[in-house]
Image 1 (cartoon, rainbow, N blue to C red):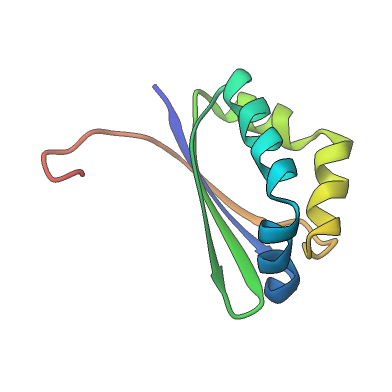
Image 2: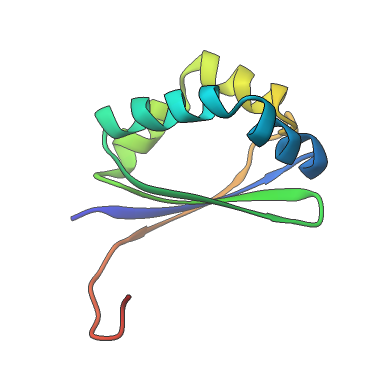
Length: 100
């Protein structure tokens, strides 16, 4: 069964939003790469000084392996992510009658 991964990264949200526009092709390449190694769904959100990721992965191991890539870590820093580790919540994905 798949897992939901919620990550909260501290960082510069203005820089991040600008990077979404200026470096869209790089974000798209990362998305395609994640799909080939177990990524199922992905969304971003922003708050006051933080970026939220909401993902679904085939397994937590797939997510951890993908996120451990040094090039990805450098990319996160270059688009406004703070150097400190993000807060991560992992939960088993379940189905319910009210999902949409």
